[in-house]
Length: 305
Image 1 (cartoon, helix red, strand yellow):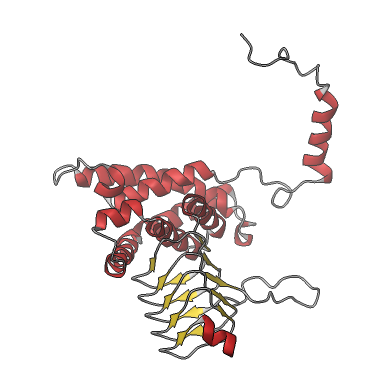
Image 2: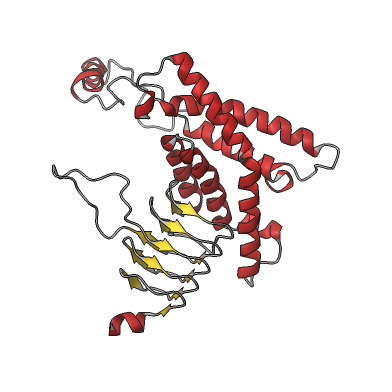
């Protein structure tokens, strides 16, 4: 029995012919928004998510892969998982390269070879990325009195997932696939509520505690042993424009946070300013000027400034 009160309707019932034709005209002519008016083949968000999950499992097999692995099976698992993930990744890289200005003159064979070269370099970077991620997990274990084990941090902390995605996305960005990197960052944002632009430069031993609502902008630079709490923003104060009024892309406009800085919940730090090494920025502080190393900035101080 049909749950609806109306019988099923066919295309003729809704007079879809003219609508379909108008949508085609909009899509192909008057409102064509495809890259260069022609690129139809987009990277797949779902496939990229599978790739990142596979690479995560290869980096940390018993945490993100299979808990029943042993010394005899773990290398086989890592090899097979990486092979599948990289085979999927190379196609997504190829598609994303179509959105890079440098690829405009490349033919299909050249584009495919460039995608393979980037994917090989990405794969070779994985041991270094894993070392960074281990430093991040160790920073969380040392910095959160509620953390009882590495396994708890890796499985239960959204900040750990967000940073894992960022380390992988940043590598892709650095290798010349910014569109794909941005897509990976947005998947992490959806999963964790933490928004880190893949171009942001983040040093080792980075810890985001709780994490919901954290925003880190494109040109932010973060040093070693930095800790952020929820709802921290490292953003831009203003957006420079050129003579025609168009936004200048990529201009340094986000903060530099030096080593050993702690930024508490709700703090908003804007502009190309420097937070000196060893500083502490209190909760809900609105900061738009540089502070010296070793500073302790609170709301009361900012209101009195």
